[in-house]
Each structure stands twice: as C-alpha cells, then as structure tokens.
Length: 77
Figure 1 (cartoon, rainbow, N blue to C red):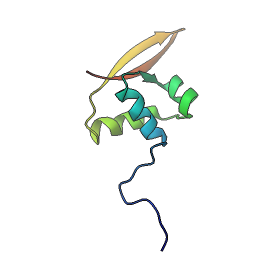
Figure 2: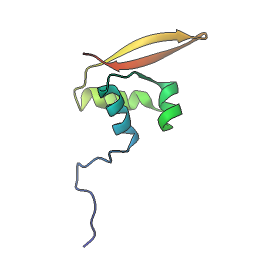
Figure 3: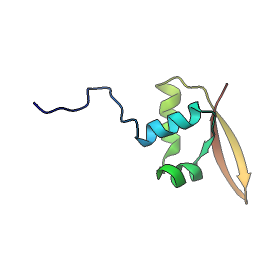
Figure 4: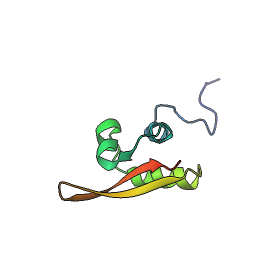
C-alpha cells in the first residue's frame, strides 16, 4: 500500500504555510518580499485564503516606496 499524506494534511514547507508562519510571528509581508523569499507571485491569493478559510485578521497597509505603491500585510493583534 502506498503511503501518502492524508486528506487535509498541508506540507509545512509550502509557500502558503511559510506566509502563514511569517504573519503569525508578527512579521510583515509584501509582494516583493514574498517573491524574494519564497518565489511567490500571487501573494494576494494566499492572503485571501488566510482571511476567509483560516479566519485570520490580516491588515492591509498601502505603502509607497520609490514611487511604487503596493500592499504590505500584517496580522492584526
């Protein structure tokens, strides 16, 4: 019999889990940092899932740096 993950198990090293852990530790994340650290290009999709499926209270702050506007996310305390 082939051994595998049970339904519902999540790979602890998946980009999704890495973002979740980062927010739970009190750190912020934005698209640039997500790409740099985890090679993630669709951070907003992960944030959406964390908010709606995991009921995480994630704040969005609009930031402007070097003339570029982007969202920076953090877990509300």
